[in-house]
Length: 301
Ligand code: ADP
Ligand code: MG
Image (cartoon, rainbow, N blue to C red; front, side):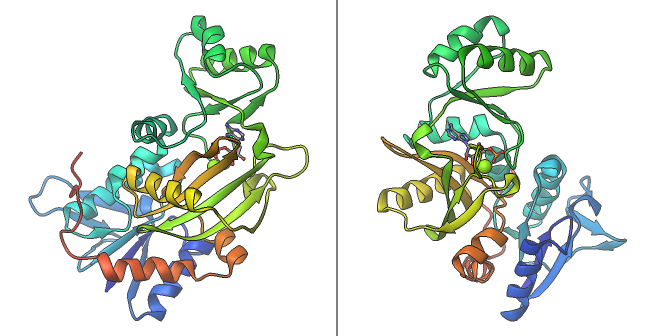
């Protein structure tokens, strides 16, 4: 197969591993810098150009779209979909997962366990909002943050009020969430490919920190997940419409709660922690499923 990898940087671990795994299995791998792909939208024959050349003959595309380029990246991916190229994850599903609030709304509709979460616009509603999610301590999140940036733990009612007020004052959309204290600064990253969790790791926040993100100094270790956690992760990915996803779960005393579903989960942490060939499994998934015109939405919606 000829497979495109949409990525800003060919030297990133995940991009390198996907290219390597594809080549090992006999595929032609082409890394396209997302922001340098440009498109001809007006024609009946949708095209993507890159460095002066029309990109043609691809059977599959692997989007590795960073949060900072979601808008443009999804437009490029949509163009591939319109050309009938099979995307590992569809543009619509990626946009859904990038908006944390939209994602939680979709998951809640299907009855998936979530931390109690509130959302408001007017500063007048802050006291009631805080009460709605069970009061302090609580977690405040910027809707489009990643890597733990824009996630704040407010330990007291007063702190919560002033942080929420500050965000709203800056015209920053936020959500307010019940703090799952019993998770002890740990969460579980379930790596879903197709309808299976193919690898999982536990991430533990460093001392004095509640965010377990590896970018915030968290450490990863092997973990055995329960059948309930496995099922929750697979269902969450399916609800979002993602073929490949990193589903983050908090262990609460009333079962697994999904915190977020990542559409371009990193490979480095999960491969080094579990010793599994995750990149290879992703390529195998494409071999099984990539057929021209198999995109569910063909760039619609
Ligand atoms: P990001 O997209 O920036 O990673 P997350 O929603 O995943 O944002 O939050 C970052 C980290 O903060 C999580 O990995 C988890 O360790 C911690 N965290 C987030 N929400 C909660 C919560 N409701 N209760 C306890 N810990 C949380
Ligand atoms: Mg996260």
